[in-house]
View 1 (cartoon, rainbow over the protein chains, first blue to last red):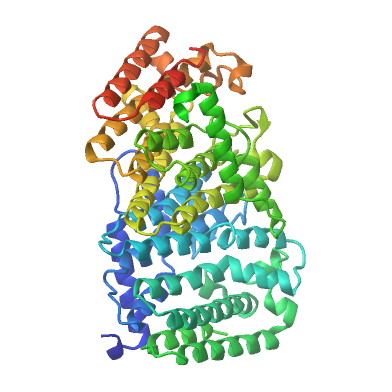
View 2: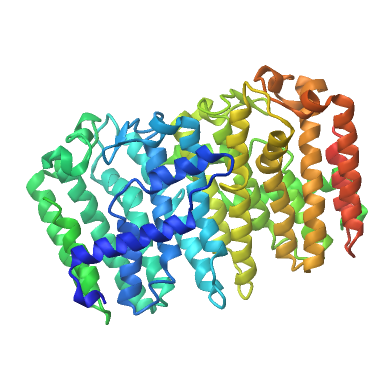
Length: 298
Length: 298
């Protein structure tokens, strides 16, 4: 199917499939305590590009795997991403009132519920993986549990958020900034691709090439975000432009300048394409996604 | 070995084994961001009865399973329990300054780090399960992932904490109080026993009996906690006596009176013993643990 529709159609169709799957996997509940379930769904269905689950499904497709069967795995990625946003927005953390133009979770449900609903979404990602139909494929699913937890936890995403908090109000050097991006966003983006590859039984060589692809686009994606924070328009991002600078955060444009940052994005994107072409794969869609990620109004 | 030592020796020896395992599994780290790892270990090694992992290991032993191999699984239970205490203590939640006589995590490391270190411990529990040696036993390990996440998440422990927050300052009725106890503490205690049973390849009949045992002692344990809050001495609990009453929380003594609460504990303990004796098991240690739990200075 994917060969017949362009990337925008693909992103829209795939995003809708993911939302339907999440609606089924995290259904509305009228049971006590309702506010917990309302809060989880409020953030889970607050929009967004669904980039991580899209990457998982596009990788499964590139390997000729079963995209439909991979939907719960892809959803688990999005649930972890969503919980991380909920906790990052808390007053004790980034203290953000809005995300994607909507009030943040704790502004609507209160801090306690936002903390607990975030905890619940994180936990439910593993509940999904541990309880989905996996007959005969338990070893792969268990490895996926390990990959996801490693990427999300204390040597992955959480370490990145810790580093990002420490970066507020002081100038991080190049090494520290690379650490933040590799961990805060890079680890989970890379896991999204790797988990798709594991689910679709990639060879070691394929897994290695896809991991390289994911690391390159993960960093490019974050540099683009930094650039957009400087030059973007408020309505396109749904947050105040220059917010990073206002928080005193170091970013790629601050450390390297705009032109050099753009050059880095170009170089990383080329390397991502190169990684894909090094192994036999149906990689059209992954190539398109790489280009789309870096061409967001830079 | 266990037949030769009394329960106190067993608890001390087993507690030390669990702490050694956790020290190996969550080692001190001198790498950036150090505060995250310090914060995780601060709460993980802040003492406590290690009741959940002890239950897991005692269950494995009752079934003749490999106690040494079960240590990472038992540790995962304690990591989830610890994260839940860290988040419960936060200013937005119970706002506690002390736990077991020591300053709470956020008083030492700050709120942001306490939130993130809690997230990291929760995640690391699943990382442990997903990456431990499990050759040929992946189906069991995956089921354990599902059990643990279900017990800890939105239909388990987190739902209990939500309900407990709502209980502050108002009187919960009997049904609501039973919900809080069954979810906030009961779910994870039951999971501790069930996960030990699954790990040691219990039969369905054994699993059912052990689940019943765990549910009974889980509730008895919580009622004893409620009673101790009324009649206990401050130094024994390491927190202010009457704290629940001061928070305006409903408890078993408030709803049922002290004598009826004590009678409930006796009845539940008897039922726990009965459940164990219904199946062939080496249950001495589990019987002793049930008696020990309810005889804490009631």
